[in-house]
Image (spheres, one colour):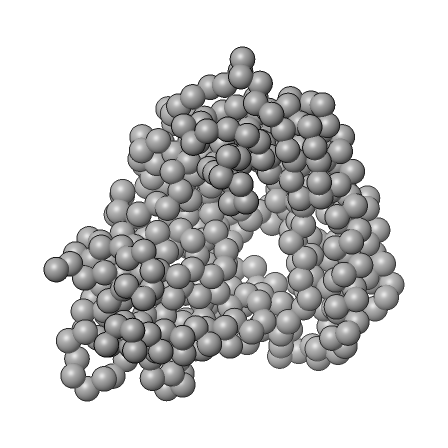
Length: 448
């Protein structure tokens, strides 16, 4: 009987794709996917340590998995992967008796070997590999992609920015670029398998420079990928504002497949806080970049990340964040309360001095403002017809489908499952803060 595996994923799109890669590695080693953790012989927990309480969430889940022994007669073997695994290492195994394997962010390829060793060891010792392997290549076609329409493709591993709040350089290592030829081949394979949209991933995705083609920067990579037959849309995350170059802006303007949406994390509207964050751009520089992008690509949707309650943030600093949010008019925003992360510069140098109640109030105020901005933008779409790539069926209503515009707006509409993977023209009838609702104009529907 084949051994069964189950992968649980927390965190960003890069973690989702890492889980797809680990699934491929396990299936190559003879495992088959289980529908639930309770049915698996091996459970992989792919962790994220970017936000507060990630470790507590992990240990709580480990306790739940340990209790599965009653139903199965034995508990599954547990592998912890991702950023918490890299950050905590052997401490995970010492703290929890249910951890059998700890695999670091750069040792992912070793997962099947570690699982095999853990299953065969009689001493109960956890198998741990946190080695910083330099090879960023991955076998073509091995990832078990979980989405029938979209494909994630990593182009950069690690980060060299060292923003003072960010744990990523300490958990994913220094910046390493994948060869251009591998990336293009990955995209070609995804398109050949029916995926119509590709998401290019990297911690600072627009810092890309091809190691096998020194003349190829990120804009050049977009142009190379744009030529892939069968591909309809190209997205990427997350760029850094200071690397949004004129060449990148020109590529977004000139290449029809590149979505007219740019996620450009700012983190704060205060230049003083940005300096403490080591973001290497000021408020005014960010706003100038926004103007440059919008002048070149009219109608482009801009989204961002924002942190409130960073050490030393005053009411005046927070007012700058509110005013920048109003001035830019972001299409969406990921906003968070600051939480001190292990090993970061901020944790070592800056006291976490903004009270939790103040952080909560500021976050609520910022989110209320952003909801109003988004609602107003969506209401301006009423009566318009927009092109939507149909992602799948709605989780709320079985008779509804869902998809996104080029500008990344979520659109729900009545439809049938055979439309998934097609481009549909949708007339917008209702608008809310987080999504739009419309009806298919059946005269314009491009099936794959």
